[in-house]
Length: 270
Image 1 (tube, rainbow, N blue to C red):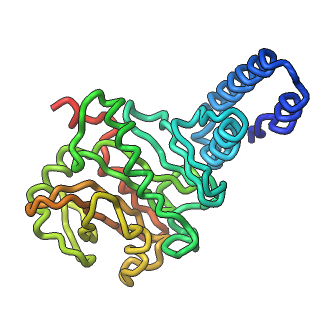
Image 2: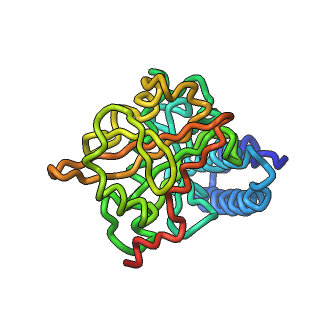
């Protein structure tokens, strides 16, 4: 496994260097080293299940703390410390896909803290990430053209909780537009495009209450480690903004609701 960048060394050099110009050069050098290091991590991400955690906990947090730059992440929020923070990282797959990643260690859907009071609602900053998706798509996207998803414990490659944020598949968007009136504010069985799910409506501009908590309150969805969860933007017939939460359960969490997304973002080409 690749080790973290030499944080203590760089910090010590910055502290003892009096020349502002030299300090600036050291900052640039450190950022460059971290960027090259992240490229190396990305190259082995397929076999290193801790790659996302290593990037966020390493250079993203370090650079924000010391240089006020989230690089190589696109965004990072540490105002509540690492325990309450989050980062946004551009995924290497697709032109528009981003990942919302907590800055505290959380494994995934099986983590016992999900659905409780201790964690922030990560779906709110994940939803705000849609602006980065639209920027990369070079097109304004409707709220029902953005999907957020977390895969089940048995259907992921990384052992750090992360929410995929990207364009929704056009067929999923069209199906939900036609059938949104069938979805109420309680979890219920919902069959779509040949697959069985459970779905419910969430009202409001932002995804709250926390969708993890809403899923944990549904006894049929327990244990959460067997679930995958997607939250897709919606505009309902009454004009109200909201979301459609979709869950799927499989033994061992072998369920992959990232499949509701389109990493080619074909909706941007319509």
